Each structure stands twice: as structure tokens, then as C-alpha cells.
Length: 296
Image (cartoon, rainbow, N blue to C red; front, side, top):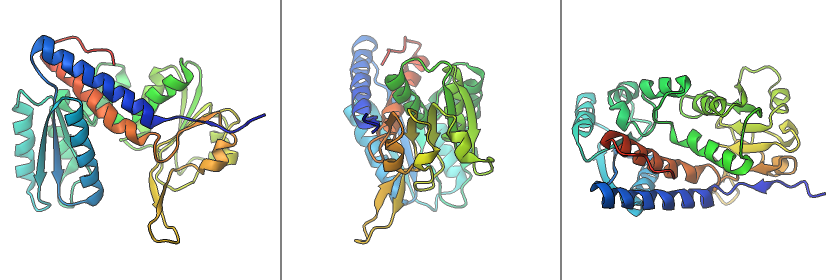
């Protein structure tokens, strides 16, 4: 019997989602005369952030959106950054605002996120959107967790009554994905570095989500046979040639021998983040304009 897991191809799913969003955006332009508008703010010269912002700009253009980039020096003052956010809040052509995190030292990220209009908070980090998520109200949901749940539903269908274990309790991934899985009628455990017998807790999971930022921490014997594994981690580990390679939070080969399905790293969750950013911007634009949100 073949026990190797089926790969969950996030790259292919994200490509399809981006295509559907582009079709929906063209429909909005034709029927209502507007394009979804996304503003991305990059502060400083962080190389990883620069790569992310370039990818987002390219995806925005390909989707037929109105895209704006604001690149600010690391020396920018808090007041100037807040003034830019206020201008974007007031701009009728901008429906989504994303301030690339982390910000350079000396800037108050929490204050910047709190200043974004919740209706334009396409990262889903504003306290109003966080509250809406946990309350089951209508808000904007963080992109990476949303992508994870879309992949799970595509793979498994109805998630009702599944036991889900989320390793990691960050505001960006761990907590919001737990809330989304609760909304799908899963029984959810949030585990973390202080959890007693973490491997034993993980073995109870029909769905295991790893989002801890520790390379290959989750071993194959932590996985319940037949479980579905979502690996959110992206870690660069050294190689003899000095180039390094990307691995997830899960020891892939070990887990793939036990799980029924697993996301690879790279090519799993990563591509979903930008696709869901576009989806969130489409949703925000429609809500702000008071028109129906297309099903994508």
C-alpha cells in the first residue's frame, strides 16, 4: 500500500484564484466603472520585504488592479508615516492598504496598523477585523490563514468535526487560523512552545497546521496516519555550497510517509498569501463601493 502523501499544490491553486480575481476585477470595471485599488507601503531596505513588495506589485498589475507603491527611507518619522496612512485612508481610488511589516526599529507598528481604515485593512490585522473574525462578523481576514483554509477545503471538502491542531499562536497566523477553523466547525487546539507533550497533542490531529518558524521541528512520528498537514514555515537552512535551501517547520520526507496530504515548502502556502491579498482587496473594494462581492 502506498503511504506517501499527496502534495497540496498551493502554487496551482493560487494561480487559479488569481485568474478568477482578475476576471472579477474586469467585470467590476465593465459594470460599475472602477478598479480595485491597492496601496503597498515599504519602509527601509529590508531585502525580504523588497522581494515581497515586488511580487505584490506584479500580481496587482496582472490582476488588472490599480496599484500604488510608496517606498520610504528607514529614517522616516512616525508622524510622516501616519500622515501617509491618513492620505491613503482618504483616497477614493484606494480600497486596500498594506504596510509591509516588520517596520524598522524606532517605528510603532501597532500604531500604524491601528491607523489604517479597517475597511481597507487587507492584512486583516486591525483590532476591528480581529474582533470580527472571532465574533463571526464580516471583516477582512489575514491572507496566509485564509489561504491555508482555502487549501484545506479544496482538499477535504467539509471540515466539520475534524480535530485540528495549530502549532503557533502568532497574531499573523496561529490565532487567526484557529478562528477560521472554528468557524468551519473544527475542534481546535492551539499548541505552542509551552504545551505539555507537544508530539502527543499533534498525534490527535486530523488537520495539523505548523506555524512556528523552526526548521523541520515537526517530525514524522508526530503525525497521525492519514492526517492533512499544512506547513506555514519558511526557513532557510545552510547547505555545503553556501547557498542554503528553504525548508518548512515540518520534516517533509518523514511526514509525507505518514500523512494523507501535505503542503510542500516552497510551493505550498507561500503562493496563497499574495492570491488572498488580491482576493481581500477585491472584497474590500466591493464593500466600500456597496456592490455585490463576486464569488471567486
